[in-house]
Image (tube, rainbow, N blue to C red; front, top):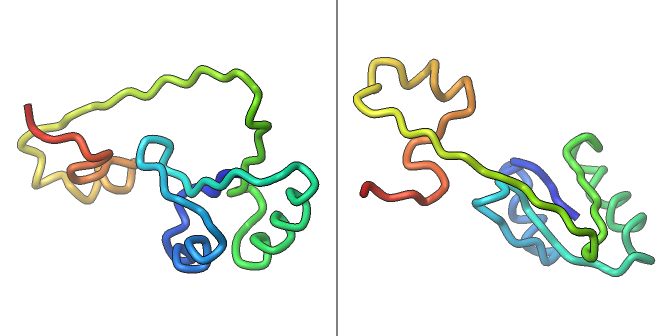
Length: 95
């Protein structure tokens, strides 16, 4: 189960055993198939259901992530933030 970008409830998610994946930008937790509906009903009390992604752990899936680095952009930081850019995002350090 993945919960996308909801830091407002991070403490509740941590208490329920979720871990944050900076690569996926989501809170994740592996649960048994028979507990999925119960967990979803619990979490949906706090957030919109469209933020929840449920995937089978044994499903093969290949995802690609790209990183774009923008230098000398301080004057445009608000625009970049509105469009999903992060300051020192994803834990990538300067090369």
